Image (cartoon, rainbow, N blue to C red; front, top):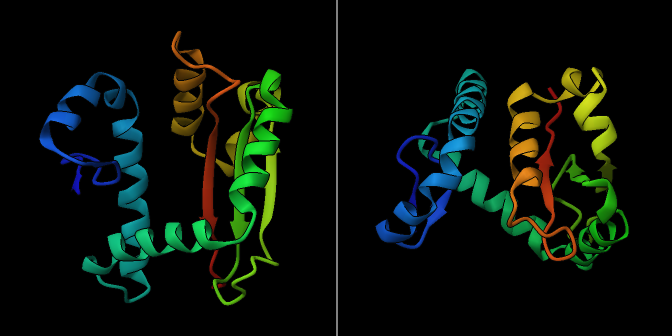
Length: 156
């Protein structure tokens, strides 16, 4: 896999795929770059190594994907609330429970993430802009596509 040279977060199978996706990705790239930079700085401040960051991120995604029924639950929530342009977030505090018993799944409707100022107390404004862009695309089909975020929070 190849990663975007700017944000380092989006994976591509080839240089050609990256070029084909650039018009779409350019809108969210800067926000992703800043978010990754913040997360890297936090990791390094806690004594972590920069080289381990991508591996940790991939491990997080792989762990979430192995939780039985989680992807189906997220897809069902997206389908049920498709008329609300929901942003779905799955949160865990550890990767010890392989059954995912501590995962909390939130559905955040557009009326909240688009207009409510409390959204910005938890999420960066760049996420709001990314959501607006993704849901605003003419090609976006809420019956077939949805947006979600997998998050691991670590105790201080």
